[in-house]
Image 1: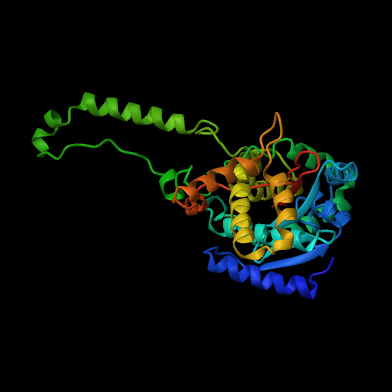
Image 2 (image 1 turned 135 degrees about the horizontal axis):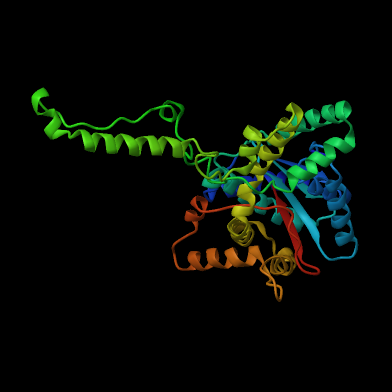
Amino acid sequence: MSSTLPAELAEARVRIEEIARTAGLDFYPVVFEMIDYAQMNQIAAYGGFPTRYPHWRWGMEYDKLSKSHRYGLSKIYELVINTNPVYAYLLTSNSFMDQKLVMAHVFGHADFFKNNIWFSKTDRKMLDQSANHAARIRRYMRSYGVETVERFIDACLSVEDLIDPHSPFIQRRPRNDEAGETPAVRRLRSPEHMDRYINPPDYIAEQERKIREAMEQKRRFPPEPERDVLLFLIENAPLEIWQRDVLSIIRAEAYYFAPQGMTKIMNEGWDSFWHTRLMTGRLLTDAEVIDYADHHSGTVSMQPGRLTPTRSAWSSFATSRTAGTGGDSAKNSTNATTTSESGTGTPASATV
């Protein structure tokens, strides 16, 4: 793995970033690193974080990606991580034209990560956090045994999707100062000698009974349905301290990756729209046009019987651009991704 780009590619990277920012894209600093296809598959198998906690499923995912690449079913051209700074991995075997295309694509990802509202609450230091998570889980494995911890992680991963992706933006639970309040019957103001007529005792007693019933209702467990099942388990399940910590790690990473799945189509379409605009506008040379058209058409092609996220949103952005409405509203919509494999012979990319 190398963070030093070849001189020609380094010059192209500076030029592409300048053109992207001039075109209106806004993103955190981007760090490009060169890796080979084996390293790309390894990092992609870890979900983009090479420092992630140890678990057997990463090896299973690596085997799947390696065989897919070996049999010519797919190829990951680039990998982008939603952090600050943004880390992007380039494949050493890419041609110079492909590297320029991928860089333009990456800057589209970086712009979307920074400006899309679903990503506004994500942890931009997740690369460091994943290393901390890995260190804690390795410590538990030394203390309680690898199989014991792995079996518990397996159980946690079976429910990792049971979170509330909207919770970072809304208040589901009452605040602490509201939770302990005991409501009282509202009485109308009246002179003392008229009180029994204006606030009849029977009425007050009926209202007090309703309040008591409402308080009993609140004592139910849980008082209201919980959307975030992982949080409910952390707070209430009979777990040991280390188990509670492991479950909190799974939950934190599930919240980090949630916007990826929620914005998959829009994210890939936004990036493809911008790499198309940048490449065809100012980056392509005459000798690169044919190769670019071939590779881009493979990226946005629709395979029979399956949804191609890149094609679906890219065509919408291209249409809106032609109609004069631009595409800026996409930043306020949705975003996302994990490794995506395309059809035979077509490129694939991944963002995390």
